[in-house]
Length: 159
Image (cartoon, rainbow, N blue to C red):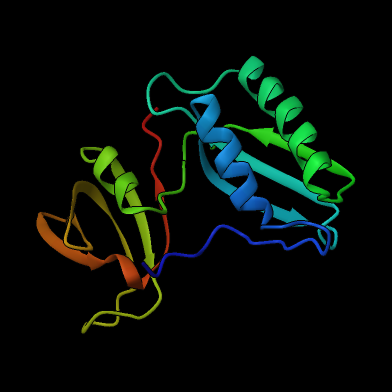
């Protein structure tokens, strides 16, 4: 799939990427890795987590932070600061399963390449995904968006 990959910071002492280690740890705790980012030359790590049912609490973030800190130490992943957060109301959609799970919600999608009319941004109601194509109702018509060509996709919060 062509969606922007979750960062893969490879530490020279680590056997795998930070994202791989985080994803494995989180799945064992009942969470999913939504996104992971590094800044400051890889010294600051931010991990966004979600739970398929029920969302994420502040206590969940603290528990995950403690667990990831221990695992990263064992794996030899060197960093100065780790931040664990929920993905927020405007949660990014990265995997095909995200597009299926959030069908019925409003989304904002930015494509890498424009369509035949030159349009790259699509906002509308997500209908789901099938065979690598997201279906979105935009201005009263269904638009098929190839997951491999999506640059960014986010939920649009309805307040």
